[in-house]
Length: 116
Length: 111
Image (cartoon, rainbow over all chains, first blue to last red; front, side, top):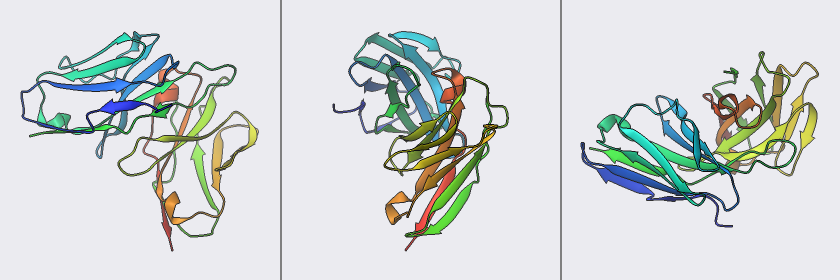
């Protein structure tokens, strides 16, 4: 398995522009998570899905952020309009429900977003 | 949310055993303890998970005392490549408690 695949790896955009980050989870995994990491705030959980349904979006900073999961193999995180304070590394992770004990989950390599 | 407390940083030398302790006083009955490792410019990587007593895999050991209010990640004979940030998470299955990362412990291994 290729693991969790995120694109793009790097994104530089101007303030006010729309940004779309993409994630392909591991096949068969039924949970998908979006995290944001900055030096100041560390790793923050933004939103997670179970079987393509958003379960907890309480970490989404504000209405400028939205996430979708149209099918089991694809998710997007959109920021519109983007602001410099959105600059961070955004990680996607996926997890299988598993049997018995809860397993850890697998992270992608992240998208480094810079808003200028 | 289950609060975990870890040392901010630790230093070690190659070949030494490193023990990182995590305090989680309000752990619940159904909670598991999970440790992750993160290298610069990479996402966190699952290392080990346990519920009680001792768990060992090819990478590390996890020691959990009977009261489960703390846990210790043990890395045998570290190398330079073990320099990373280590996170302890506490929670059951996939609730928000299990998905919250603290500040982690930055381990620096010197030659």
